[in-house]
Length: 252
Image (cartoon, rainbow, N blue to C red; front, top):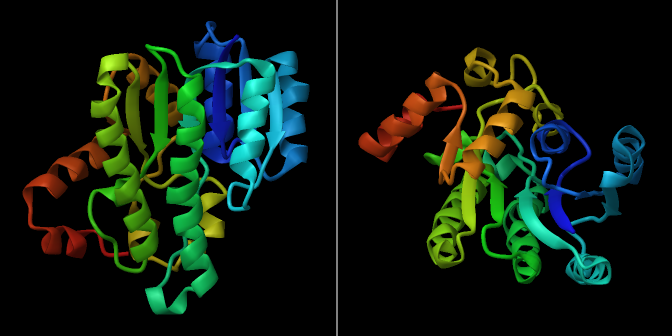
């Protein structure tokens, strides 16, 4: 059974990825949706029916990898598409963000993504796809988002390395790099109007469009997808200019 797996599926970009898969990927027979909030996953099942397989998991808790592996094994899923979307950020100087939040960002954004990928790969056949939700924050270190931007730099590096490793199996790995979106990410990150002049002025990315175009970019075998010309330009500039200068430009 050709299966897609989406982590962080209960809201925002994760939910839009589910919507886009249903509309765009007729080859997918089952979508395993993973998040902490079981009620949100149930609503996805109510909306789309049997194609949805809710799997409530907290990816920051010990033992989730075994539960995921058990589900994949018991249902004999053929994982054709893995979307590692779970993650969060916090705005503020490193010393002002709690020790637990700084650690949790690393655990969810990096360790959990790494673990989910490791668990799923044995269930993926040649020609499968992996999409890792990265960020424009991966292009350069960001002050006042030091941990978050560092975790996304990790996601970018892992995505590129895995893509090269899995080339022989024709498994493409795409780093999906959105700019700010009007999702739950912003209030969770404490990014409200007036908290950051940069965030107040940056153009917002359409969430549904980001999901749809990322899926299409993955299907075409792309390594990185960035939405909007403004952020594509920033991606290019970040490769050309000294990091210290890019950091000043992107100061949050």
